[in-house]
Every structure is written in structure tokens, then in C-alpha cells.
Image (cartoon, rainbow, N blue to C red):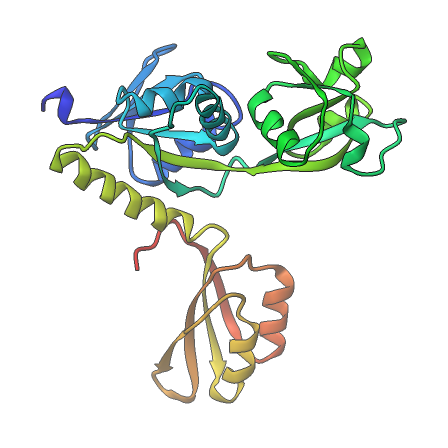
Length: 299
């Protein structure tokens, strides 16, 4: 098959999004062949190859049609869009899907001993960040004048080094802030991974595979935390059991041969199933309870 007929997808080569991105592709059925330290992996069973690149490069690789698709954090995408807007250029990548991983937030944080009232406390301060465009846009929108100190990394230690009064950085759990005696005071942007595509019209074959990939991604995303529950129950207990099944819309009810007063109940629960849930179902009259993971689903 001609290489131009194969989709190319750019993902972060190393970092917090890499394993999650590869896991998503694996759950979508993609098997990759990749040698050690190679920057491209080849799909063995699908016409899709993966480029391993710096996350900052993904928006440009996609909008310049070097790569058909990209998985990138919304924070990186918005920073690039604002950088281009500042130069009078228009970003040309198209967001196809927000994805349920890579959740974080771009936040302002101050040293623990620093007084903080509200956003007016920022005026005249020095703020260290690796996201100067997003920070500048936020300051402008709120009518705040402050000095932006652009760093390439180690933003969290800037106040201790005397390079800044406060920081604007990505926060996930908050443990890095705590370790550096900083406290989060305001969120600028909530971020997660998004799937983007080239603005160029692709051949029909590629468009078809993008549609199939989106369908598979939807099938994987919608069953996160979902479980398949099977149980037996008296017919009289069905109203209460339906109430207890977490996130289930329409359970399947199957008559049990030789037991006219009992049925089998099968349901996909779109919320996590805890031991307490099973104990409540048992107390309501359910028996032979079985909980199975759901890997994928197509509606």
C-alpha cells in the first residue's frame, strides 16, 4: 500500500500523555511495530502510523499537513493559536474530539506566605510561566498590568530564585505546588487532550479511516468506568433493583426457565460499581451477581 494512503498521527514522544495516548490507540485495535528510540511506529493491522514528537510541535505538524491527525493538550493548542493570532495569522487545525484523559489546569499560584485577595493582587507583579500567550490574553481580558517572565521550565522554583513573585503553570494533583511551598489561587484554563486534524481535504480512503477511528474512540471513551452486571432476582424486586443499578438506563430482563417468579437481569452500568452497590442489590433480593469490565461499545 502506498505510504500516502496511510494516515499519520502525531503524539507526544515522552511525557505524561504518551502512555495514555498509546493505550487509547491500543484499545481502538491498533497494533504498532516500533523499534527502540524510533520516532515513527507503523500500524501492523490498520493503515495508521504514529509519529513521536515534541508536544509543542504537534499543532504545526497538523496544520502544515505533515501529519493528518494529532493528539495534544488543549493548553498547548490554545497557546499556539494565541501566538499565531498575535502575528496576525489564523490557526488552521481542526478539533475533532475532546478526549477523557490528560486533565489538568493552567493556574496562578503564589508563595504560601504571600497575601492574596483577588485578581487585583496581581497588579505590578512578575509572573513566571511557560505559557506567555495564554497568560497575556488572561491579563488583557481582566485589565491587569503585570510583567510576564517567560521560562522554558522549572517555573515552580522561580519565586524562590527571586526571578518572579508568582507563577502561572500546569497543575494536575497539586503536589508539585505543595513541594515548592506554593498555593493555587486562580484557574486560567481547564485542559485535556484533544484530537485534531489537518485542514487539507484528504483522499476518500483516509477520510473513511478517520471516521472509523472516531467511531472506535467513541466506543472506547463511552465505556470508561462502565461495568456489565448480571444477576438473578425475584420479579417483585425489579423496581428496587432498577433504582440501585448505577447509571443503567434499560436493563435486559430474561425469564428463568423453571422459575416463573425469578428473572435474570443484564445491565451496562455507566458508573463505577462498588462493593456497597452489590451489597445493596443483594439486600434487595438479587443473587448470583456477576460484574464484568466493558472494553468497548458501539451504539
